[in-house]
Image (cartoon, rainbow, N blue to C red; front, top):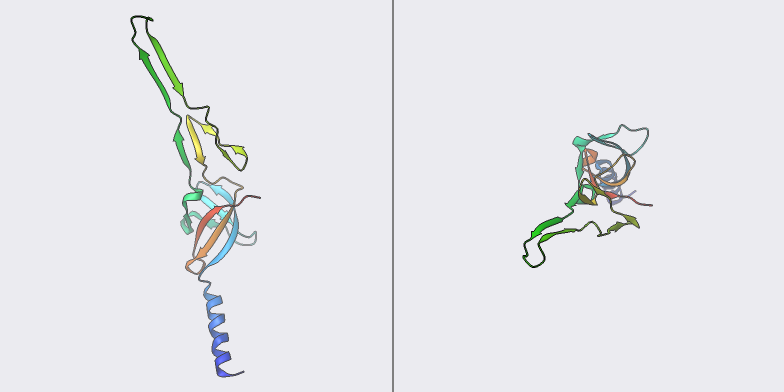
Length: 134
């Protein structure tokens, strides 16, 4: 081997050993505190080692209900009520849930969710990029 080839091989092995970034797939095993498993033989990744992106954090909006009284001497008055619960939103062919008066636009992570992770800081931290769907 020539000197240049040896230097290239050493540089390649050094980069592989440092693992600057690497994609992983994992499964949520707990949510409070958050824990993710990437391999049965490895310890779970604890919440302190995880960064969450917007795509895996819960987002919800209140369902608007509007009621007001109508004061009218001709008809005798009354009230008007409008509720926007007839709006149907879907994700992957499934209707988005309504819970406690909120439309859940993006649910938080749940046990059993498969996730795509980016391993960073030499494997010391993981960035949760998104949920995986089959």
